Length: 479
Image 1 (cartoon, one colour):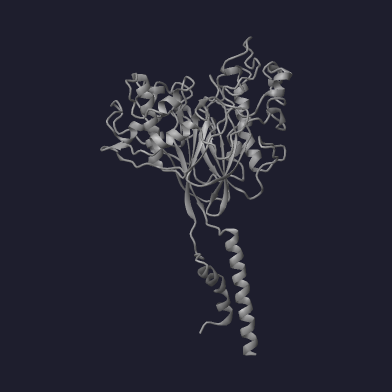
Image 2: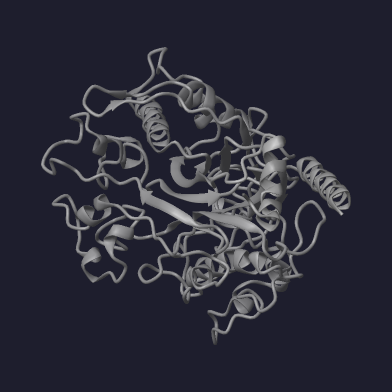
């Protein structure tokens, strides 16, 4: 016979069963990914044109055909990984089909026309071949395309060239408004969004713009005029927090693409900006109060929030041109889970491919299996710059970098194997010299347990109350 105390421990399970809820529901594994897919183009409107013509019809030039094939290769990589939530960096922005950007944030649920066409014309269609196998379409029911600072004119001579205009004088580098933007694809509902496009760099306490410790003419407080310091934005593109509803829980996807710490002078203005762009998310997950968003709200995440930081951070923990230990601001945060680092056999192999044009990889400290980008081997070499970093309160099941090994390093990478989707550095017969991108897609799987909706909790508590009442009546009847 079951004793009374043990019988009472079965009550919650009985109530859940009566409500159709499994008391032992397992956590779901949810895949988050980031991919700097190089879906930027050299001229305004070219990406829209490419995405509208998936079959390269109409007698297009070889250059255009290569660009369109690159989009197909990017789509196939995305299908092979099949992430549940995906950030795509370097994806040119448009406003309802008009190439542009804006200082006014995109509304919740906004999808650019390019993001929609990439879904409809490329992600929905299967890819592959008999050698590497076929893929099926992947559908993302939810999208968000934030505005970007890239190419937006500042009205100032920010590079001190003596004239105003061009990409270096924009709020974020871009040869036209919207170049190098980003978009987010999700299989889960996006419930809320915060953007930080207009956050001013000077409003970050102890920032490297107005509090640069560099002595002399290379101090940014000297390099930039007072008027320029007053208008400079921190984010070179945007910093974005989208709130996802996954298994009844709120999970924040924090997306960014800090400027590369190069293409400047001895003042290292891009390196210092990259450092503070990365620091922004360190402060944001810590709930710092100085932060304000484009929607008029202040503060960072609340304590205990679940999040994923994703993006091309343009910073390696040990190698490259970062200012200080830029990415360590996140990697060393106790709020970030770094228990598993995505890796690949392809990254290890690529460090010594015969196609390399230099020996920069030989002196690197970061192990090449963690590299995520195939850069010039003469310098800086391959680097780990793309990250998917879950919060410490999320368990990581697995993670990888999509970088297969080249089975035949002497061929022309057109035999149809999986490696042909990523290729080797500087193939001048391809758009941007790669079949897809110099960056590789990075993904991690995290556990997110189901939590009943509030109305289910209410029913559960009511059920417990009813069972407690019945138990008390039974006791009285026995007495």
